[in-house]
Image (tube, rainbow, N blue to C red; front, side):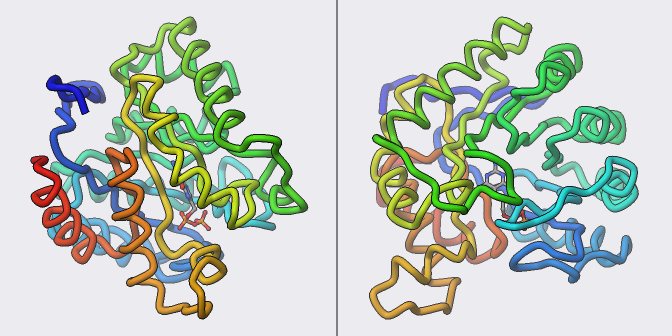
Length: 281
Ligand code: HH2
């Protein structure tokens, strides 16, 4: 790592990435793969948001549409109905920066008005309206790689060189976001672990994270509770906290700057120790 830490800017918030940032996941969906149905009640979801802040997350990612393999799309008005009150409620009660996990510009725009400062677009900012929205609002963006669509992405994904292909996609989307007027310092890149990838592809990407980091922007990685963990584990162990922590640590050691996780308190304590061992923070 160079002497100068990377800076990530979201509206008036600025993070100097001297240590690993933890993004806590809040899914307000009936069908997310690990926490679906737990926070569909608005009050419970806001409480969970406050708890995520109290547990030490650096930012919170609120989503109203599951992107698990096979998930069906949700109309924009339904997605907004799920998350609108939750974003406003968390924003009213906490200073934690809020990210909106959405592929739809109309949903993201409303979320930014309600207090969000980051657009986490698993669609990789391929929709020009999304890039325009990020540029005009001065918000930050996570540009993620996905092969295909959640409904079909796990049907036999193939790559000649997964690391090179994901890097090329992110480089292209990064450049086109900048052309659309998005500030370089607003952008974070994400290889999209589990999005149109086999377990082997996911591991290759984690081992090759430095290649993505070579694009000069912070790298965000989400491995938390993903099903490939059980396929990578030699005994198929599904006690996923340990598997998630080990894989998150592996990602940090290979170049991840920001980790997206469900088990916030445990991960915050884990990465603080890891950062200290790595001489970061
Ligand atoms: N993973 C999920 C959702 N959003 N965003 C980014 N940037 N990176 C990720 O790896 C990522 C993401 C899937 O996890 P989860 O939100 O828990 O599940 P679901 O999509 O079923 O709600």
